[in-house]
Image (cartoon, rainbow, N blue to C red; front, top):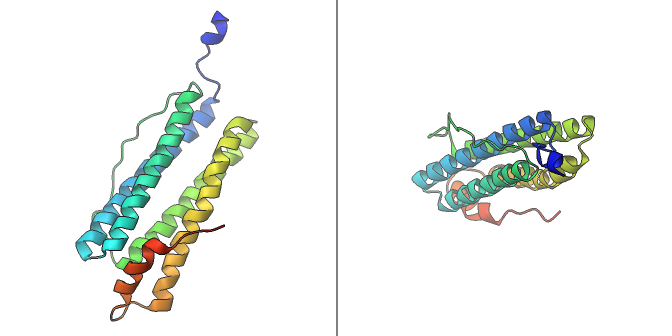
Length: 174
């Protein structure tokens, strides 16, 4: 029994490293969304500011879910340093375009983690990652639907105001 307690972790080192890298991705996403919230607030897009503040908190929860998983499996989760967070954005539409790009990147990262889990036969982590993959369907869907509002409503006149008013209502029912 004593020898079992000496085992550091049941996580493969590669899996631990890739999960720590994802912790950093989630922390970065949280920080970018918080910056977007501040920018939207400054521009007068109150509903979008609230939307991005909630997105920021959600990404932080994702980060902590990964962080706790690594520690719970006997690994060592690393609190990431976050740098290069923009303070300014090109346009109202641009923040949502960047959101979609970020979410598509996150989806690819989780696909890479799932692939690594299968290759290393870490089916416990593979099962854990399924929740995040399903979550990414919602994240990408919401970003796409919001961007569609820019095309349907348009940005002229009160268009941006209308879009801002409806951003928080977009949801995924999948």
